[in-house]
Amino acid sequence: MKKVVEVLNELKGEFDLHITCSLDGVEKCDLCDEFFKYNQVFPSSIGELVSNLVLQKELSNKRFDVMITHTLLTPNFVKNNRHTIVFDGRDWTNFIRTRNLIGKLIEYIPWKIREVQYKNSVIFLINPRNKDYYLKLHPRKIFLVPNGVDVKLVSSVIPQPKVYDFGFIGRFSPEKNPDLIINTFKNTQFKGLMIGASQNRVVGNIEIKKFMNHKKALEEIKNVKIGIIPSIHEASPLVILEFLSLGIPVIVSDSIDAPYVKYCETFKCCDGEDLRNVFLRIHRNYPKYQKRYLKIRRRVMREYNWDLNLAKYLGNMVRDLVLHT
Image (cartoon, rainbow, N blue to C red; front, side, top):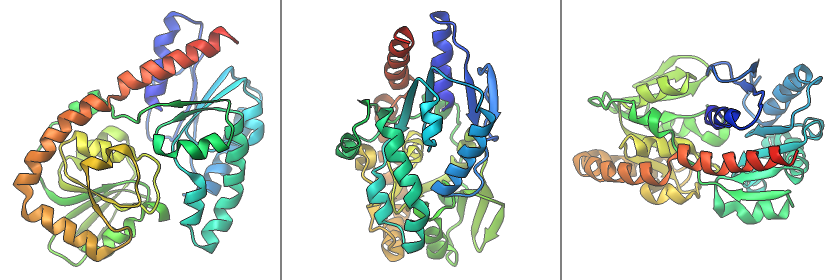
């Protein structure tokens, strides 16, 4: 979302914009005119909802011409604003199906709230393969916006000799499935780095680090030979593009259906043995895969440049909304 703020900041030359932003407390934003700290109280859609209720209370006396979000908003929060733009790409009905009974109960209310929220929103759809799901919600408009990587940020990360055999970046939540990696590799000779936990710890040969700011996370993860994304359900995971943009071979669960998965190696979802076999194949032939993924890196940096995509789509959309507000 920092990139969103950068695009809006560029529009200040055309419009008298006052930018209010809310980040997670780890990232900083020097381009906002006003800042509200957002802290998710616990990892789930319910946690997201509770966090947004707290944030909504802080913002209750404000009304925005354009609200831009990639998270769950309460119906009153949406109605308070003249226009709402939502970045999403996940099929939330399929997501609910992947949850166990307790998970279904936890996610049911946020699922229904999203349907109300999206009906009154402009959707920036970052995974075109889920277009039919969003059409059924009857939003105001849908724009297909390819997900993208921060090319400037990734290019600033200088490659280093590899210290870890494998790596993971993401929330330590059930749908991200980090436990599959831990259980598959904790008693092996392979050294791992996992980023996104609530606290630092070590499990066998795996170094687990808590959530950190984006640039620092990329600086850390550049030291891995192979990236692993074992998610049970995803929309259009940016972390895959970041691994690819760093020239790192990536293994992903076959449950992930995003256009750029064609550049990855896949394993059967939740199958630790299949994950291990795919990993061993790449690890044993690492020089060959490294050469291949350096070529893929150049292609991904051209196709998924977030600066160009976001400036083109979001800039034009906000310009149109502001002019008609």
